[in-house]
Image 1: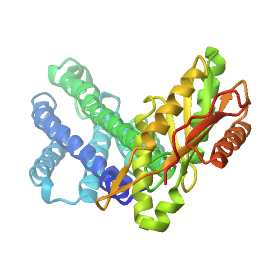
Image 2: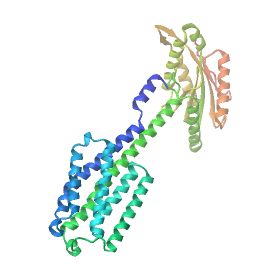
Image 3: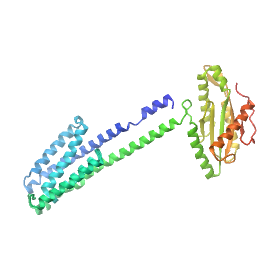
Image 4: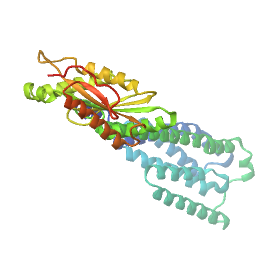
Length: 385
């Protein structure tokens, strides 16, 4: 990974903990927005039941909770995240318990207690949510015992209540509007979490890709090249085509380092990497596997003549002078070629045969190429100095 690539990766990196905290803040704010709307609609309807039932302490509680919701909603920017969370959970629990112990089966407080368990499970842990769910069950059992034994009684005529518009309006708000608000917020929360996971996976893939690339040239290294070669071999077996393995070694590279220094050598390697990539198709692979050694993988070939054309193009491009510090630097290339599946059917053998063919050209002192089976003629381009 080059310094520039590292800087770019750092700039675009996802901070999982920071993002998750921001997502939870947004989720909590969505819930408070929804609760403010529900409170503004539900409280007047709830209090209007006093015309049928008379005034009861539960209405006073609802008004107090509505004022709390309104005050916290307008001052939410100055309230800490944890404070808003605890108040919201207490709010759901208070509304739920007041409904259960006042109206029993006629109330809809159970919905608020269920939502309370859901919130605790989401913001804290599944274990904590389970504890709250058990507490909810015990609360319902307690209310049932108190009503069954006559200790608690519904403080008005139930028949009158169930025939009132306000009673059914409260039920509608508690069982439809309130769950809709909460579930919509949860849906947005889940989608955002999925997006975050997707970004993290992309970041991991980017880091893995950069780690498998040469720092100087940006080309894939041997491990990544082997993975791509394996994929090309599978495709070739499926399609009945060939894969060419080109082992490219620069001629005259040591002389460049000795004469001009390592910076000139690095400059030459970068230039050669660019020229190799321009010599092949987009779907082909160019990799750096050693100091001045490169590998070119050509897939989907119908004949070895296609590999010949690429090898000739590579040699012609590499032999072009490279300008460094106002000086012209020349080099050349020796190329050994092995073909899958004719020459070998495994990566190690393909590389070994191409390497051996390349050294045959190297020893001749010429820029050229040769196939592993020795059938193709050698190129006659003069060697670089």
